[in-house]
Length: 82
Image 1 (cartoon, rainbow, N blue to C red):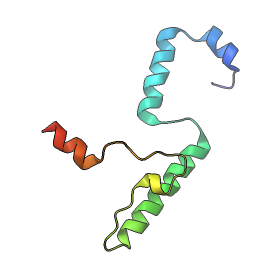
Image 2: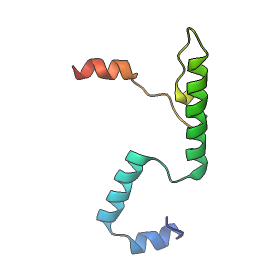
Image 3: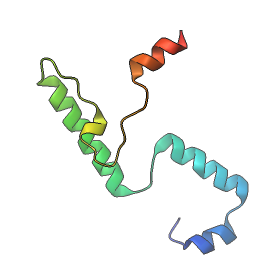
């Protein structure tokens, strides 16, 4: 983290700062550049596939091998919120 080893980071970071970083990562995603590139490419592939498909609806996880399909679909989640 920040160019330091895990041991160095544990010595230099406070628990509240660690929690703040966890919240940031939960909201913004991984710091891993490869995962960010994979997600961007998968998003573009999803848009392209959905715009050229008459019947099928693709999700981003189908083009990103390191992403898991959500347990609940967007439609199911929205139905439970009403």
